[in-house]
Each structure stands twice: as structure tokens, then as C-alpha cells.
Image (cartoon, rainbow over all chains, first blue to last red; front, side):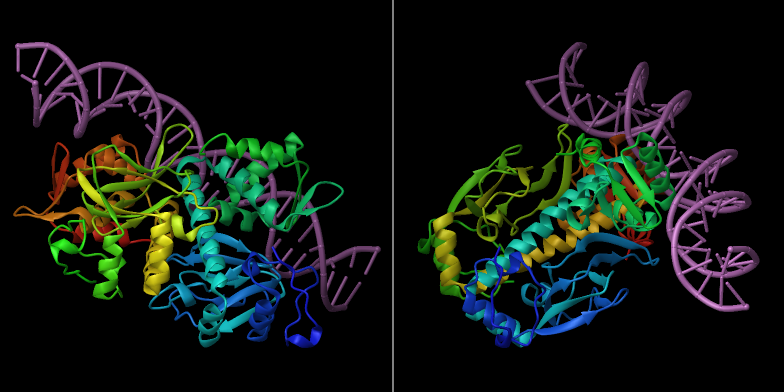
Amino acid sequence: MITPRLRKTASAVALPPGFRSTFFEGLTAPEIEAVLAAARQERISPHQLLQQEGDPATRLWLLLAGRAAAYRLAHGGGKLFLRWGLPGDAFGLATIVREPARYLVTVEAVQEGSLLAWDLPSCRALVLRCPSLSKAVNSVVADYLDGLIDALGARSFLTAEQRLARMLVVSARQLGRTEREGIELDLTNEQLAVTANVTAFTASRKLSKWQDLGILKKHRGKIVLRFLSPFERIAEDTWR
Amino acid sequence: MITPRLRKTASAVALPPGFRSTFFEGLTAPEIEAVLAAARQERISPHQLLQQEGDPATRLWLLLAGRAAAYRLAHGGGKLFLRWGLPGDAFGLATIVREPARYLVTVEAVQEGSLLAWDLPSCRALVLRCPSLSKAVNSVVADYLDGLIDALGARSFLTAEQRLARMLVVSARQLGRTEREGIELDLTNEQLAVTANVTAFTASRKLSKWQDLGILKKHRGKIVLRFLSPFERIAEDTWR
DNA sequence: CGACTGATTGACTGCCCTCAAATAGGGTGG
DNA sequence: CCACCCTATTTGAGGGCAGTCAATCAGTCG
């Protein structure tokens, strides 16, 4: 992990304070400057599609702030949730990894935020200039792969309840805020249900049950986990 | 696709006649010679573990002949089937893609065959010598990713019957032999069931049903599909 | 002709989805 | 401050897909 320290004038982009990304891992300071100098910054808004599966992959980008969701569309309009995108996460890797370059998944912004994007020529140039960028890309892809296999195992071997608990843990680690009462998650039942591949009804029932057990508290559009361990126990009893 | 043509004396390895691999795509003839020269050839037998998930990834290898299965183990001894390995398929990519290098999945030989393996130093040297090797690796990984997402969608949106039909189609394309009666698959009910994530009982019932409909014929350890289209219709009615 | 492994069939069970209807939270405008 | 609306959420009843278990049958090999 590297937190680049730059003179404000060194590039046109404004990194959020404290921004970190595994994507810059292994890059030297001047390299990072070069990378940032080649980037274009954009603001993003909820429901905005940041890339669409099947489209020609023309740019690689890094989420700076906000939240995104990666999914694949089913023919009936259903969404196969794949993963959250958080500040520091890279997308559009198909741009430099795939031939012909087409996006594998659809990514949609969930919150206000911003991203840093590189077009195809910039990507090629930067990869040549910074060999460790390839390493970073490989790492990200490998993580993606690992996460997918894990998700596949979850779908195959876990019950709806276990999948829900698992997604609560995963989501808590990724987008949870630690507050007085516990870990707060900005998720509607509907959103959680999609990520766990469960109906909103089932999600509601299980969440109610857990609330009765006193291990979480529900509000409209928000879930507060008092502790993480009970959910880890429920989820990890199986598979791995 | 490239079929390398070599003097027999140029390397210690013996490629099966007509061997092709996307892995050699983009390599020049001398590069291929260099790659082959650095390889070690091995015979493999059924049930032999070719790599185990979690182990340090020390070598990259290419299946020359035979059949392998890639899967991940569930804690209860269950297997999460991921994909078939066929002649020309590359494995152990974690060796050069991941840091620290650990295998992501377990691969087991299913039939007699042979493979070509490169140890870590050879890998590094060859990647430096042949930049297009990285391209090939990326392509393979991207395909793996795509297949995994597809499998995840299948688990999430398809019924057991649809998943079975889908796996029949996929397996037919990969390991089917076209014979007089139709496409022959060397698969037991058990094996098919695992790949479709269904119990062997369900597999048996659906196969019987399809046999009654006259669109396939069953033998012990073998399935003969008269036509592929009925199964494509069953499987593709949903998801994508 | 046994012995072993693969395949079948039926009965039963249960998880989770579907659908309908009611309830509650949170904001808005009068 | 209250009436109102829109959306998120709850709750119940019913049903179906597919898994579990037990017992039987069939194919292959020594």
C-alpha cells in the first residue's frame, strides 16, 4: 500500500485525503506521478453506468470515492451481483488484459463519488513505463478470481441463511462504519438480498430473526451489526 | 492457434501429433522452441493430484494429453467443480500471476495422459524472453474469469434440469466424440452430477426422462446425445 | 458365478420462492 | 402540525423443486 504524496501542481487530479490503492503498490513516486498525470478525473452519480458488459473496453479506471456495484445482467433483467467497488478498486482491466478488449461485467455507481480514468493509449504507454503495473493488474485479477470461486462455493453449498450471514460479514468488512452501537451498513433489504442471491422476503425473515436474537438492529435502509462473530460462525460453518 | 513444427531433436519433449494450444498463440517458431526446450514432460494417471489449492505455486504446466478436472474442496470433502482441463489447457498460472504464489484450485487427472511443466526460474526467464507469453496468460485468465461468472449465473438462476442440460452442452463441446449414434460423452452420472452441482439421484431422473424423450441414450459411464439442440434450448432459455 | 461399482426408483422432507395483503418510516406540502 | 404519498418492510399461506434415505437392479470384471 502506498499513499502518494504529491505537490498539488504535479497533476490535474485531486486524490481524496488518505487515499490508498493496492493498484499503486510497487510503484515509485515518480511513476505514480506519471500515472496520475495521464489520468482524467470524473464525478459519478448513483445509477450511472460506468461500464457495460460486452462493450469495447476503451478505458481502465480506479474508483476514488463513492461506491459501485459490479454485476452481470441476466436476460430477464435480473442482476447477478459480483462484487462491491470501493475507493481504490480498479475496473476495466479487460482494457489491457483481453484481446479483443471487451468489458466482462457491468459496473454501476451506487453513491456519489469520483473516478480516475485512463484511455487505451495511456494504458499501453504506462504499462510499458511501469512494469510493476502489470503485476498490480495481475494481483487484482487473481483476487477477483478467488472471490468468484468463493462466491460460487457459497451459492453451491450454503443455505440462504448462511449466504446472508456471509454477505453481512463481507459487506461489513468492505462498507461498514464502526459506530457506537456496532457496525453500520447502508444497505436496504433488497440490496442485501441481491448480493446474497435470495429474495427480499427471505432476507426480511432472517434479519427479523437475528434482530429477535439481539445480534443486529434494523432500520430503514440501514443494518447495524452489534458484533461480527455470530455471523462469521453462521457463515463459516460450511465451505472452506 | 499454432501448431509448432520442430525437429524431433530440438527438444526432449514429444508433442502429440496435431497438438495445438492457445497458449502458444502469438509466439514465433524459435520462441516456441525455447519454451519447449525449458519444459519437463511427465506422464500422469487418473486420481493423481497435479496441484493442490493453497500449496506454494512452483510451476506452470500445460496438459498435453488426457483429461483433468479443476475444483475447489469444501470443508466436508465435497468438491466444487470448476472446469475441465483438456489437451492444450494451461494451469498453475498463479505461479507467475500471483504474489505470494499459491495455487487457487486443485487439479486432478481423470485419464491417463501427460503434461509439460516449467519451474519458477524457467517461467520468469521465458516471460522475459517472450512478452507475448504474458498476453497468452492474460487471455487464459480472462477466459477462466468469464467461465466462472457464467457458472455463477447458472447456479443462481437456473434449475437443476437447466444446469444439467447446460453441462451436457458444455461437456459435449469439450470432451464429446462424434460417433454414428450421436455425440458420446465418457461421463458417469456421478461425474455429471458434480459438474452441474446436482445430486446423482436428480441426474439419474433427468437423464432417464430425456432418454424416454429419445434425445439421448445412456450406458454405464457413457452418455450419447443424439442432438445438441434440445439441450441448448433447455439450458439457454434463461440467463444470457 | 460372486463381488463391486454404477444406476434406478419411490417415499418423504424441507428449504425457500411466490403471491397477496397489510404495516411502518420518512419526507413533503398545505 | 397534520394529511398524504411513496417506498421499504413485514407477515402469512401455499406450493414446488430438489435433496435425503433406503432398497433394488444392472453391468463388468475377475
